[in-house]
Amino acid sequence: MQEKGFPTWIKVSITLFLILAIFQNARSQTITMPSIIGSNMVLQQNTQVPLWGWATSGTKVDLTPSWGTTTTIYAGTDGKWKTSIQTPVAVAGQAPQYSISVKGPSNTLTFSNILVGEVWLCSGQSNMSFPMNYKDASMLGVVDYQTEIAAANFPNIRLFTVPTSNSATPQTNCGGSWTSCSPTSVSNFSAVAYYFGRELFTNKALNVPVGIIHDSYSGSSIQAWMKQSVLTNDAELKAKYIDGTFTATETKPYLLYNAMIAPIIPFAIKGVVWYQGESNALDGATYTKANIAMINDWRTDWGIYFSFYAVQLTPRFWSTTQVKDLGYSRSMFREAQTNIQIAQKTGIVVTSDLMLNAAELTYAHTRMKKEVGQRLAYWALAKDYGQTIQYLGPKYQAFTIEGNKARISFTVESLGGGLITKDGLNPKCFKIAGSDMKFYPALAIIDGNTIVVSSTSVNSPVAVRYAFTEGAMTNLQNKEGIAAFPFRTDAWTTVTYMDLPEVTAVDKTELNSIKLFPNPFQHIFFVDGLNSGIKDLEMIDLSGKSLSFESEQKSSGLEINGSDLVAGVYFLKIVDNDMNIYNFKVIKL
Image 1: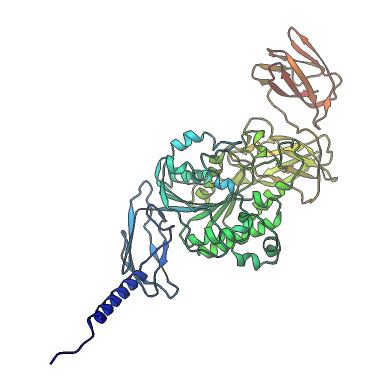
Image 2 (image 1 turned 90 degrees about the vertical axis):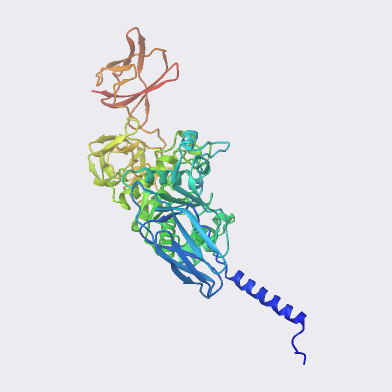
C-alpha cells in the first residue's frame, strides 16, 4: 500500500520557510555598539566603565576583556543591553594594549589596541573647534603651528571627534572613530583639546595614556548643549532659551545635546573642559545659571561627579573701526563665566594676556591655544591628580584705602612665587573711581604681594576695576606665568569710563642705549643716546593729560626744562626718527 504524505512542493516550501526563519532570527540577534566604543580607544582606568549596545530582546551577549573574565548579559525589551567592567590600574610610563571581544549568537565584535588611562571630554564652540592648522583670510593656525603639528607624535594619546550634527530628538549613535595622535590626525583636531591632553600625558608624575573626546560646534550657544527638560523646567531658562527666537541651528535649544552629547553618554570620563561663550556674551547672570544647570545635568547623565573647567572669553573689539576701550559688557560676561565656581569641582582659565597683538582684538580667537590648554591642564593636575602645581593666577581678595590710593591684595594660593608683569612694565588695565562712579585710568605699582592704585583725578577712591573693559590686554601675572583674574571691587551696574589715555610707566632709567638723568630732577634733565634724532616728545601727567614744556637739542644730548612742572610723577614719551618709542617715568622734586 502506497504511503500518503505532503506533496514535494509543500515539503520544499516548508524547508525554505524554516531556513528563512532561522536566518531572520539570527540576523535579528546581531549585536551592534556605538561608535564611541571601538578599537584604539582609551578607557578610564581603575573604574567600572559602562559598555553597551543593541540587539533583539533576549539576545545573549558575552563580553570578554583581555584582562578579565567573561560577563554575560541579555538585551532588554527595549533592544538595549548594558554592562560595566572593571578596568586595570594605569601604571606611569607603561601602556599595555588590551582587547575586548563582544560575542552574540550571530556575530562577534572585537576591539583591539585599547589603552587604559585618563579620558576627558572637550566641548564648546569655535574656540574649542579651532584646529591646529586653522586657516582663513584673517588668521593662521596656532602659534608656530607647522612645527607643533610635525612634533605631535604621541601614539598613547588617543583622539575622538564627534561629528557635527543636530537633532530634535535624542540620538543613540554619533559616528566617528578613535585614532592615535600623530601629525596627520592632530592637524585638524582641536588645538586646545590637543594641548590639554598633551600636557597631561607628558607630565612626569602622571605619564599614563590619555583619551580626548572632542565634541564642539562653531558658533554654538549654551542652550544648544542642554537637555530640553532642563531648560523647560526652570522659568528663567525657559523664558530666555525656549521662548526666545534663535535662527541658526547651532543656537537652537537642545539640538546639539541630542545629536552630539546624548550618543556618548555614559562613556566613562574623568572630567570636562569647556570653551564657549561668544554666542551668549550678552546673557549676563543668566549664563551662570544655565552653565551650572548644564554641568549638574551632565553629571547626572553620566552618573559621575566629574570636574568641569572652563575658559574666559578673550579681549575683543566688535569692529575694525573701534579704537576706544570704554565698554564693559564683555567683562560682565566674563564675571558671569567666573561665577560658575559657586558649583563644586569647577575652575576658570583667564585669557586676557593671550592676544598676540592689538590687531587680533577684532577676532574672537587667540592663536595662543597652547597656553589655554596648559592652564586647563594645570587645574586638572592640581585638583584631579593631586599634584603640587600652580594653577591659579593672582585672584583679588580685598582692597584698603590709604589716603588717595587703594591697595589691592590677592589670595595666598593665587600668588605663587609673587607678582610680576610679563613685559617688565607697570601693571596695565587698572581703573579707579570715587563716589561719582567715574573710572579714571590709574597708575598701578607692585608693592610686594600687593598693588597700589592711584590717579591724580581721584582724591578719595571708592572702587577699583582691573581688566574690566571689552579689549583689556593685560600684563599682570604671577612668577609662574599665569594671568591675574579680572575683577571689580564695586557692585555698580552703570558707571562711566573716562575717555583718557591709559597711564603707563617704565620704572627703568635706562632703556636700550637711551639714558635719562638725573632722575629725580629739580629743574632740568637730559636724555642721551638718541642716535637718529627726535620726531616727537610728549610729557604726560598721572591723569593722562599732555603738558607743555621746553626742550633743546645740544651736543651733550637733549635738554628738557621742567621748571614749570609742579612736584610729582610724570611720563615722558619719545619717538625718534626711526619711529622707535621710548617711555620714561620721571620724578620732579
